Length: 347
Image 1 (cartoon, rainbow, N blue to C red):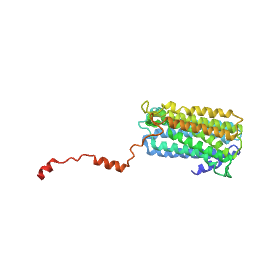
Image 2: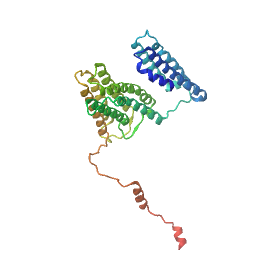
Image 3: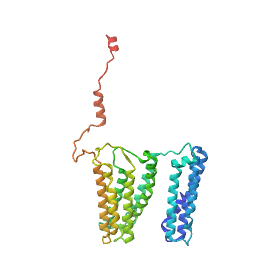
C-alpha cells in the first residue's frame, strides 16, 4: 500500500519527467513482486494449490522484465507505452492460463482454486464504480462550474447523467428476470467476463477524464474529441459484451423483447458516439448534449423492453395487504383439526 501511494503521486507525470516514470514503474514492480511473494509464502501451506500458485508466481516475475525498457531515457515514449501494454496483456494472459483447465491438466493437479463468486462480482463492481468516479471528481473539485447557472454547470450535469446511466447499464446486466452469471455458466464465459473489465475500465477512465474536463473548457481539441468519443463508444461495446455472456433463462415471450433486441442499442449507440469524433464543427455543449441524450435513450430502451410482455402504463394495485395482515388472514383460513380421541375421553 505504501508503494501504491508513491505510484499514485508519480503516475500523472510519467510523460513529463523521467524520474516520475522510473518511480511509477519501480513502485508498480515492487507491488507486483510483494503480491507474488505473498502467494509464494501461501503455497507452502496450501499444498493442494501449490503447483498452480507457483506457476503464477513464476510467470508474474517473468512479466516484470517486460517493464525494464521504461527505465531508459533512450526509449521513446511510444516505445514505453507499447512495452507497458505488452506487459499488461502478458500478465492477464498468465493469470488466465494459470487458473485454466489447461494448466490444471499440464500440472496434473488434482485440485484447483475455487472462486468466491459473490466476492468477485462485488469486487469488480466496486472497481467499476471507482472508475466512474473519474467522471464526477473533476466536475466538483476546484469548482469548475461556478458561479451560478452557466454552460459549465450544464456540462457538469450532463457528465453526471452519463455516469449515472453507465452505472445503471452495468448493474442491469442483460435485463433478464432469470439469468445465469458468466462465472456459473462456464469457464470460458467466466474468464471472458473478467477480462472484458480491463478494456471496459480503461476506456471509461479515459472518457471520464475528458468528459469531466468539459466543465472547465469551451471547446474540445481534436485529440480530446476522439479520445472521448472513441473510448466511450468502446466502453459501450464492452458493456454489450458483458451482457451477452449471461445465460438468459427466461421463457420466450416473458419480456417485451428478446435478449439480443434488448441489448442491441448498446453497440448501435456506441458506433454513433465513435462517429461523433468526425464532427469537428460541433461545440462542446452540443457534443456533450448529444452524447448524454444517446446514452439516456439506450438506458430507457433497455428498461422498457425488459418489462413483462403484458405490462402497461397503468396497472391495478394487487396484493396491497401488509405482510402481517396477510399472515393473519392465512392463519384464520387454516381449518382446525380436532383430536377425536380427546373428544371421546371427555365424553
